[in-house]
Image 1 (spheres, rainbow, N blue to C red):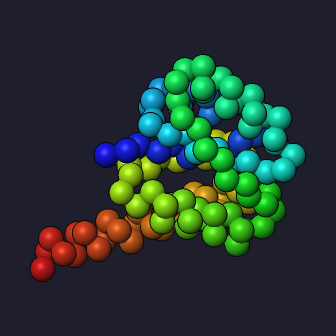
Image 2: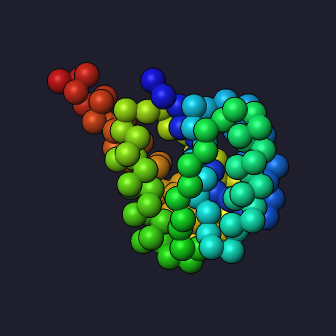
Length: 119
């Protein structure tokens, strides 16, 4: 199964870089805002040097619905993958939107699986 590690890009690249290097995913998916393009590019350069594939998705930093919509698309695109999420960086809205969406999706999926096992 393909592993995908999602991170929120910010001025501080170390929290993103360390978790990506620790987990060694097949793909690092960087959520970035328009004012974090330089940081996104630097992170991409470092990851490519370590032979880690990188993709990007732009989010709006203060639009919760946009962040949730982007996360929904990621989960749809990588339905068959093992996803992980690092929410240590990014805006509060970005972190809250991504964390909440992934958590609720996981919780619903877990309960659904538990219910099918119980019936």
